[in-house]
Amino acid sequence: MRTAALPTFRKLYGRIEQDLNTNDVLTVQLQNNYNTYSFSGKKALVLSTSSWLGGKNDFLGIAYLTVGGLCFFLAVAFTIVYLVKPRKLGDPSYLSWNRNPTGH
Image (tube, rainbow, N blue to C red; front, top):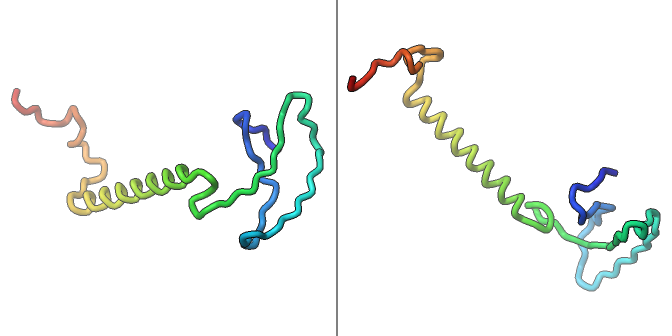
């Protein structure tokens, strides 16, 4: 068990591996194994669903897909630029002090 980073957090206790239908009845038995009265803590049972993007907040999944797509696009673009106009590896003519001054 790790310490949570924020004051309100959720910890996964278990997963229901089968699909639930409307009006299905779940029976849950709770035990108070850790007292939270000393620091005015609260406990709650939360049943939640998750999609292929993640949990209740889709922003993180969408952000990962967006950044991944951008990186893939840039990789393809840089590969095309390299194939169209390749640079000789370690060419000293690209150094700033080796360039011919223009306009002086």
